[in-house]
Figure 1 (tube, helix red, strand yellow):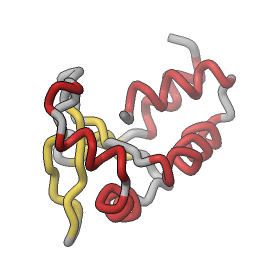
Figure 2: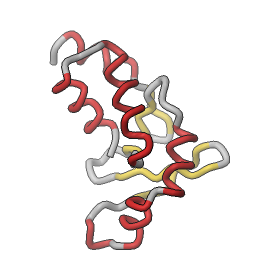
Figure 3: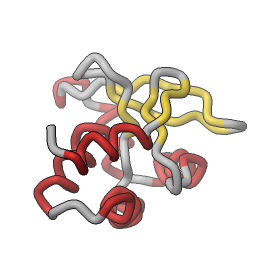
Figure 4: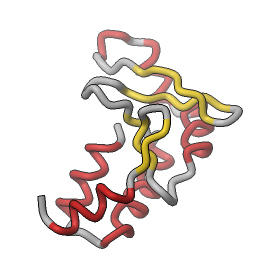
Length: 107
C-alpha cells in the first residue's frame, strides 16, 4: 500500500461497523435513499443479489450492503458526485486510487 493509501485509511472511522468518512453527510444519503428509484428496485428484487441491511442513522435508517463482509453505505445517484469529491479531496490521490477507495468503502 502506498503512502497516500495508508493516510486515507487512517481518516476512516468505524461506527456500527460502517466506514464513516469525515465530510460525508450520511443523513443526506439516508434521505436520498428513501427517494431513489434504484434503491427501491434493489430492495424489491432479491434476484439482483445485493442485500441491503438497515442501520440506524440518527432519526433515519441508512441502507448498507454487506456483500464484502463489511457494511458499506448504498450511495444513491444524487449523492455519488459528493462522495467522490470528498474522498478525492482527502489527499488528492489519482483518479484510479480515488475510484478504488470509493468502491471499497461505498456501494
